[in-house]
Image (cartoon, rainbow, N blue to C red; front, top):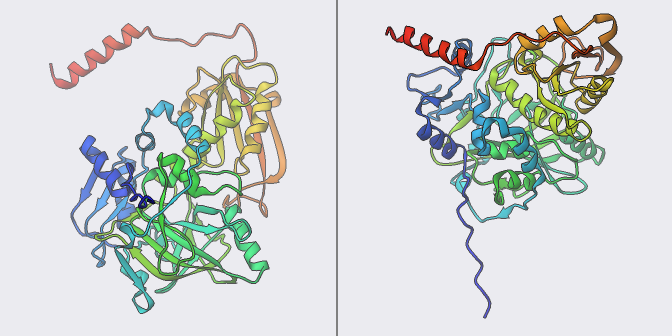
Length: 468
C-alpha cells in the first residue's frame, strides 16, 4: 500500500510580518507605528531621515499611505542589531554566522498554494498604482520600488538568481530598471538577448529578512541556485509555487509578487534615482520590465527600503560585504580581527581592516586582497587591532599618528570601479592602500583609564542625571 504524500509543514520561519511582530513583542520600542496619514511623495523618507539625524532607527510602520489602503513598512534594516536578530545570533557573531549560513544549500519545496496567492490580479486588473509605491527624493525621476528582488532563471542552466534592483514606475504595467551591478542578472539578460529572447521574471516585495540575506544580498558563483542558498539561511526549504504565468517559481510567504518579463532588446529612460552615494544617479542600463500579474497576501504589507545615503540602504550594502571580506581575508590572514565598510565611504567605496601583530609587508598584501575582492572599493585602510574600525575617528587618528604619506600609501591607476561613483572615469577609478599600522617597536603606548575608574565614573554620572 503506497503512502499518501505528506502535507507541507508550516515553516518555522515565516514572512516579513511575522518577523516584525516577533521583533515588536520582544522590544516594543523597535517598531514605531505611525497612524497619521502620510503622502506618497517624500514624506516617509523625510520621517526616516529625520529620525536617523536624531540617532534613532526604529522600524517604521505607516498605517495610512496615500490612497491605496495598504500599509508600508520601512527602515527594517536601519541598525546592525536587527541583522543579528534575524540570523538568531549575537551581534558580534553575525559575520561568522553569515558565512556558515551561506555554505548551506537546501532545495526549495514546491507547494500548491500559499499566502502570496491569496489575491491574484491579472489582465485589465494589473495596475501598479494599486500599490503604495513612493517617490523618495525631490530629484527622483518618479515613484520607485526599492525593496524589490528580481528573480530569474539562468537561460542555460535553469538555476534561480535573486538580486535587488531599483524599479521606477513607468505605467500601469511597466517598470524601468537598471542592471548596472554587472552581475548575474546582467549576464542572463545579455545571453537572452543574444538568443533574441526576453527573460521571464518574478519581483518579490516584503520577505523574511533571511530570504533577503540568502538571495538578494548573498553573492556566490553564477551556477549556484539562490533558492537553495535562501533555504540554507532559513534553515528549511524555501516554499515556492507557480503563479498564473507559471514561468518562475514564487516564494509563497512573501507579501507581494509581480510576475513579468524583462525586455532584453528594448530600452527606455530610467532615473534619476537617489543612490547610496548621496547623489541623484542618472546612470542606468535602461531596461524595461513588463508586469503581467500582481499577487499579494490578504491585507498585504508593502516594504520600502529608504534609499539614498540612509542608514538602511548603506547597511544593506555594508554587512554582506563585511562578512564576505572577513571570510576572504581569513583564508590567508587569520590575524585579521575586524573589517568595516564605513558610511563615510558610502559603505561601498572605503574599507577598514584591523590586524593583530601585523608582519612586515602584510598590510599591503591585505590591501591588495581587499581591493581584488570588491571592484567598488577605492580605499583600504589597514590598522592595528587596538583601533575600532567601526569608528571613523579611531581610524583617522591611526592615520594621523601611525602613517607617513611618502612611505605608507600606495595607489593603483585606472582600475575597474563602480559606475555609480560620480567621479569615475568611464568605469575606471584610482585605488589607494593606506598602511596605518605601527611600524616601530617599541611604539609609544596609548593612554588608558582603569576599568574600575570608568565604572565608578558611569555610576556617578547616572546619579547626577537622576538628580540624586
